[in-house]
Length: 165
Image 1 (cartoon, rainbow, N blue to C red):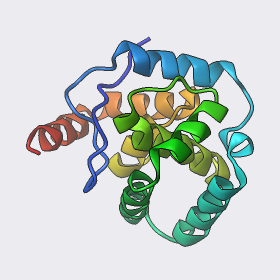
Image 2 (image 1 turned 180 degrees about the vertical axis):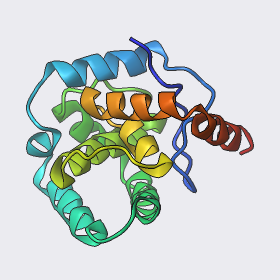
Image 3 (image 1 turned 45 degrees about the horizontal axis):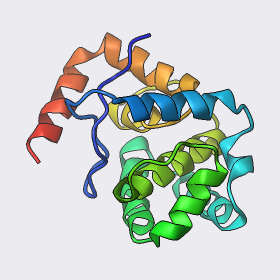
């Protein structure tokens, strides 16, 4: 199976960079996929509230605006206490990475739950494809990969933007 290159989530943009998935990323995806319960159902009550609020906030927005709202949300997750994030990630059954990566891991889990809640849609633009590519759900990632495979110029532009930071 081919995976898109996945980079770090930047605080000012969610990007796909030129780095390739490492073993822990592959292990996270495999573990997350082996447990078929919806991410939303596995989240704690506070995180479910966050996802529900995100669903309400972006319901009428286009994908570029949704991406911007999710970037702002990531900044909030990045400010959470590592112990709180660690407990939540562990409860989701995702292998823990280094503490500095807890915000990214938690954000990806919340993003996956958010996509579940809004309903999986056909990928129609690069902002949506980037978000789907960051999901722990294989179906979301496959949709993003298919979209980028048909439009390599978008992946090249996103990758070039990620390397500029």
